[in-house]
Length: 348
Ligand code: G6D
Image 1 (tube, rainbow, N blue to C red):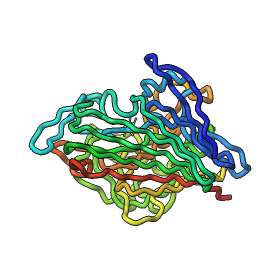
Image 2 (cartoon, rainbow, N blue to C red; image 1 turned 90 degrees about the horizontal axis):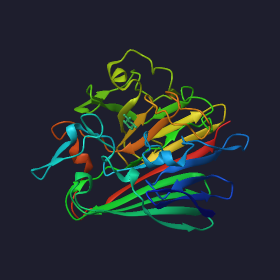
Image 3 (cartoon, rainbow, N blue to C red; image 1 turned 30 degrees about the vertical axis):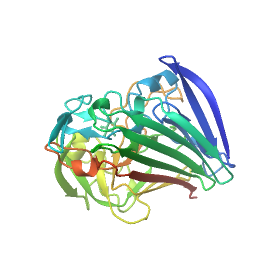
């Protein structure tokens, strides 16, 4: 296995480094020391052609603000916190409202916009990059000094494993994810409407018109949200449905069934690329790039709606009146320990 480091730019006089991790077959990732951002997931197609299966901006400087959170580590909490308010231990916490009337993706300067310390290691079977970060108490309004260790590992079996560990010296909120947008056609050659998707889930979390959880869950059997039998993402995405209407497409949290089976499977027939997702997270937010930004992609075009799907394994976002807060609560001294594995294979 091989790890190479290169300097690719500067944000505020700090060096932006890119680390490339490759296995012996050329499968691998490119990752920045800023925001834990994955810029490339390089995967062979059925003819052995290696291409990038995640969205990537052309200009490195766009990653400083990263308007659509391409590839980024999200924290301390992923998704929205309704009205930017939560009560923990009878204390009202008020966060920046950086997402309309809500807080989103960790606030104005969440983990996606931090330089992180890097350690790397490689042997014959795997290579990893590990990010260490101490988030001081009060950062973005969150209590507790939070010790964070996030590790991205690639294996000879064409797996990418993301593991997240954290602990705090006060009760706090932690709900970490990665915001990579996948497109298995490679180098964003076509949109994702013809990708087949399977989700091991029978329920989504209902959202209100502000896209925050109401506190109810919806049984999805037979609805456009039902992916228990694999179907194309495009099959039902334009159906008349109140929840779909709110997100202008899929932008919802599916509650994952228990067990160690494949939780999500994404398949693109023409390239033969398949991605299986395993995780110990209880939910996943899927977002079909319903509102793309205007920034140029690596492939010299602007992103279009439905060009990719973000697969954000996490705990449910937080609604009004502390709805679902308990799933993001990390008690003082407890260990947060989550893992998500993306396993790539070829199905001809
Ligand atoms: C998240 O659910 C949200 C979307 O609404 C958002 O716009 C995107 O991140 C950038 O997945």
